[in-house]
Image 1: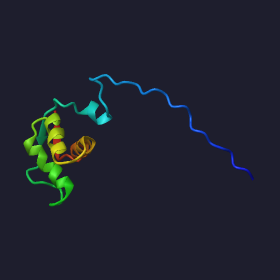
Image 2: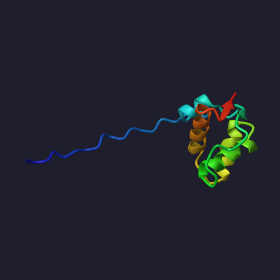
Image 3: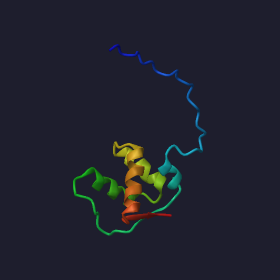
Image 4: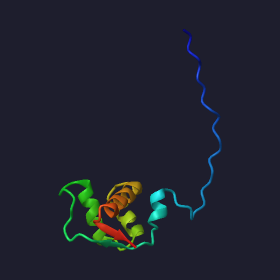
Length: 97
């Protein structure tokens, strides 16, 4: 039986995003100006893990934007910071107002 040749669809030109448009769903939920409040006195993450380091960054970061910048200085991706933020809010470790 002969195989059909599969061709890729023609690439369209990328759509330019506006500077104020959120790049992710998490960015829309937690804007950079939102304030972070830590609800746990102790760090609930395993000591020595990357998650532990991300959680300690909350203490140095009064806003979501500051938190993302602090995490970026720790050689981690901003998307990872926003994912950790969303996870910690969902599990009641922090609140974002």
